[in-house]
Length: 417
Image (cartoon, rainbow, N blue to C red; front, side, top):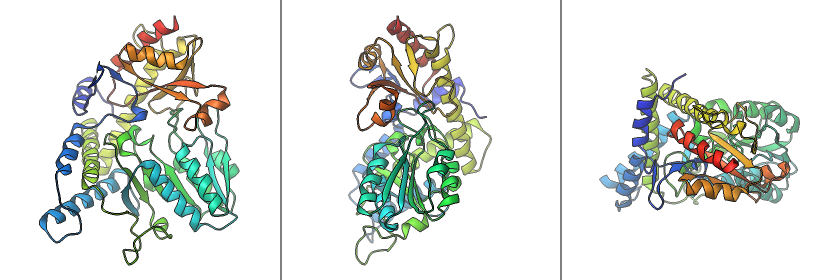
C-alpha cells in the first residue's frame, strides 16, 4: 500500500495554510479536521485571484469564455477524481443545501405511499430532508437503527429494511460523530436487489477527505460533498447526480436547458479551487506510486491518505513510543471501540470523572484543537442511545503527524491523572 514517509509529510504540510499555527491562538495542533479540513495554499491564492474578476459566464467575450473553460475543466477533473459514470456535477450553497435539494426532488418524483429509507447514523441534513419531503410527497420515512457498538450501519441492515416500494434511500458514507465508514457500494447493492428503481443519495461530506471516491462502484444517483472539508474553502457545496436523477422535475428556469440543476450564476473561483484539490491529490498519488494514469494517481493518493490516517489513529488509540494510548487509559471510553476497521481518521471519546467540555478546554489550553459534541440535533442520534450527553471528537487528516499525536497523548495522561 502506498505510504507517506517523513520527508513527504513535510512537503505535504508546506502545501496547507495554518498547518501548525492559528492566526489567533498561535502555535497549535489541528485535530478538528471533521469540522473543516485545512485549506490548500493554492486554494487561497486561486480564491483571491477570481474574487477580482468582473466577468460572468455566458457572454460573448474572451474573459467570459475563459471562465467557462475553468468550469468545464473543474467538472472534468471531478469526473476523473471521483470516477463518475456519466451524470453531472454542479455546485450549490452548501453540502446541506444540496442534500436537501437532491432528496426533495427524488421524493417528489417517487410514488405516494412509498418508503423513504435511511439510518439513525446519518447527519441531520439527510434525515431532516427525508422527514420533510417524504411527508410532503405522501411517503413514509423509515430510519433503521445503526449499530451502537461499532458506530456504523451495514448492508445487511439495509437488506432487512428495504422494501419493493422504497422510492428513496440515503446512505451516510462516514459518520462525522463516530468517524466510522459505511460500505456504500454494498449498501447500494442491497437496496437495488429489492428496489432497483430506488433513488439512492449518498452523503459523502465526512468521507471525502479520508480516501478515494469511486462513484461508479457505489451505484448511487447522487453524491454530495462540502469542499471545505476536502482542502478547499467555505461558501459552496458540490453534488454529482446520475443521468436518471437529472431528468426528474426540479427547479429550473422556464425555457432553459431541461437538465440544468445549477441555480443562477455561480462563483467560477469555487470551481477553480476544485481543480486545485484535484491537482494536489494527483500530485500526491504520483509521489507515493509510479502511476502515470490520472485515475490511478487519485486511487494511490486515497490509499496513502487512508494508510497515514490509520497510522495516526492506531498511535492515538494504542500508543506511540513510551506513551500509552487512549485504550490504555482506564478513564477513557472510545466510541465505536478501540479496534474498529471502519474508522476514518477520527476518535470520539469520553473521560470518566471529567466533563467533555473541560477536556476540550484543557487540550485547547495546551495548544491542541479538538471539538465538543453534544447530544443535540447534530449528535443526539449517536450519543443519546449510548447514554451520553457529550463527547470529545478528535479528528485527524493525512497531514497530521505521529509527533502531534504524541503531544496529545501526553496531555491526555495529565487529564486522566
